[in-house]
Image 1 (cartoon, rainbow, N blue to C red):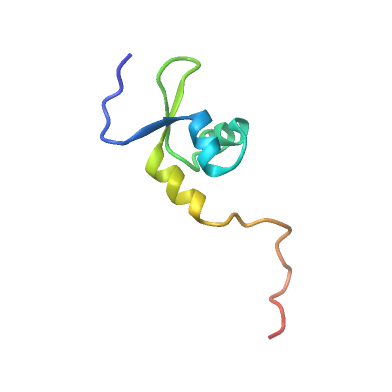
Image 2: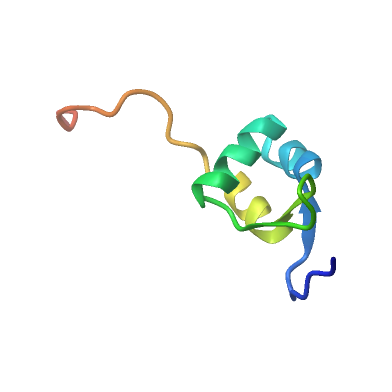
Amino acid sequence: MSLKTTRTLCSTREAAKIYGCTMGRIRQMARAGDIWSQHLTERALVLDLEEIKTKAKKPAATGRPRKHAPAA
């Protein structure tokens, strides 16, 4: 199966290494629609390399959200 796209593609393994997380987390983000992905075959998932690099530069929001803004 061929995929016609102008995007630079990478595997889940490469994306996980760049993003600094597991391959499972990359698949979760792809399934949720947080990152562009396309299945080449039933098992082969490819992702947009530029989008992965862009998202890797932004720090992830972690922790529990605050109920109130902190006092300045």
